[in-house]
Length: 444
Image 1 (cartoon, rainbow, N blue to C red):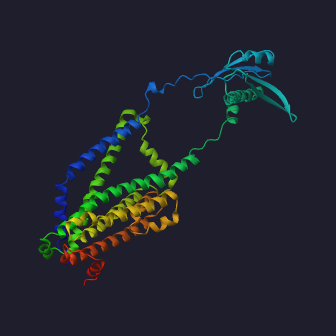
Image 2: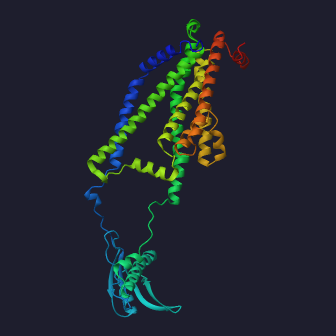
Image 3: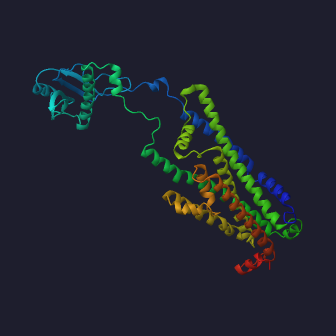
């Protein structure tokens, strides 16, 4: 096609020149290496099981001593030390009158008195545990109540034994319900915070840095060549559409290629750290990243973080970068003098910042009505749709529709940029007005 004349040559030339200069290749390799080693080391050490020394339980400091006065016929009501539930008190059985026992407890500031007795309450025989704290005691009221609760549990077990219940029956009665998976309000709150604030912020930061760094290059490349005296000759062999599209696609591929090399290095480091941890520590090694991914998949939805969702999210991300690079190329096509290049960068930087802020605030505030609109606006979609697809909020069909919209608008921008590029060639060095630009777009 005539419109695409010379596109491949522009693509190849731009790619080779960009890789050779600015330390592009060396920076890509260096960051990739650091990510591989850094992520691998972080995952390995974070999942490393505790050593035998670390596993030794710390010595539990006793809160004090509980003098236990048993005024019932029950036996064996003193709490015993359990392997997984250390006793925080020293329980000492005492005999005699309650008044004398209380005086003995008052002799030391870390002693309290617990009295177990039998009372008739509403016609029913009830075992009551009373805890008394001397005035000079340093024991807090809540701590004393906890000690009394422990004694009450022992009294209950002793009552079961007193009626000849077996240990199996007692264990069954005292068995608490167990749920395999529990999501608390705190878990949901943390999950919502992750989805609404952290993930969009990371996506916005990544896209902002990529578009800012490489978009400036596209804008500069188009502007510098446009103001060159050789451009009139060059346009004889290369169509403007091919020139703009070739440069935009070339730098988009290089920018995304660099980014995904870094992502692949981080993933490689993750697997390297995982396999090293498994090889050295076996089943005791815990992969924190896999645990986080499983938590998200169990609590967000079935389609969340699925392979198709990940692929579609990446595709939307790529087209989102492409549309802003096309906008950057349009900014370069407006330049009539080389010194205006810096001002032309505002054509893609400011829209990018505004669109990201709108989607981020809407996501953070839970404004679903605003997000529904943002998902299908080509310039705001790149900042919210990748996360929505990844978490299952937006289906794969919706992701495809967004990709088509974004691509169509990006190609339209490139077409307009090419028309402006060609039409303003005769105005190099002159002040450009909106009237002139409108005439150029209309082909007059």
